[in-house]
Length: 382
Ligand SMILES: Cc1cc2nc3c(=O)[nH]c(=O)nc-3n(C[C@H](O)[C@H](O)[C@H](O)COP(=O)(O)OP(=O)(O)OC[C@H]3O[C@@H](n4cnc5c(N)ncnc54)[C@H](O)[C@@H]3O)c2cc1C
Image (cartoon, rainbow, N blue to C red):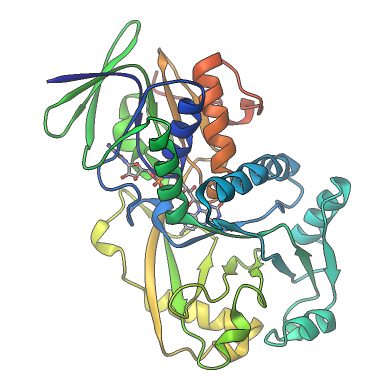
């Protein structure tokens, strides 16, 4: 059996559903295919929360891109009648006077983005749970905050469906049929062929597997996260009192109490490289990671360090060699497009990625300059 579509989007994570929504806005008939549910907990977008920040050290390109994403997130808040992006501020704890945080501060200043430079006593006064000797100063920007991740996927999918987008769960694409003129169809694990004029692959850390003929250079790393319940004074850690925090030089970041009384902590530094994500591994927390979280908390937020009530969650980054994304047309397939390799920092940009990719697919170019994300920067198989 064969099904005809105008555009098929393979992969219904945040990048897939955002692209589908923007394509529908541009008048296209779109079908999204996902091997599991939209959203699902194995996808990078299937977690509770993601950080939204405008700070990227001296890399102002990403600051500009986050600035472009921000109004689109706020529009999604309005359309969904939910607070998917909650701008409860972002506090970055700087270990040194000069470094990543001071470079971020310079970019914020240059772009006239609101921020405050706080000295340890100022931080302590506002947020008494921090140990002031642990950092030299802190950068606070009120536009930063947290994004409800899987809820954003669900909300985008439902708004896209209202625009006519079809979403098909449980369809795993296993092969791509192509001739000299481009991609003709994709085939699913049940043997069904899906035809379309154009194809988009937003398959996250599975992209290596599906796009094997192109040899897309994505390395998968295993990233652990820890959810802990503060033993006392949980109310002080609620989003209205306690901003998203990070000490990115050391790697750690975390969120206020958000779900069932849990605070979440992650480490942005790359975990071990794995060949493929192990779905059985979803909740296994290594003693090593638990220990390093305790170490971080002991230094910065000591009253949280002796947590007893906690859970783990494993997630995988799809890393490119330079940590820049891949948003491009596939070589030798003018009707095939890919957006992948979001290297553990893509979620905040999803609406501008989806909009730009839709513009590229429909009009051949996008308002956002996608040059940095082109495939030609790598040596591909073809
Ligand atoms: C632990 C962790 C923390 C992160 N923290 C942040 C953060 O704080 N801020 C931030 O901005 N970003 C963060 N990120 C990155 C962000 O979550 C990802 O960049 C983003 O979610 C990627 O979305 P995606 O749609 O590309 O991929 P995914 O969400 O992984 O979606 C891919 C989808 O494709 C489907 N699929 C795959 N193969 C097939 C196939 N063959 N057939 C059909 N369907 C298929 C999958 O089922 C899946 O639903 C983090 C990532 C992780 C893992």
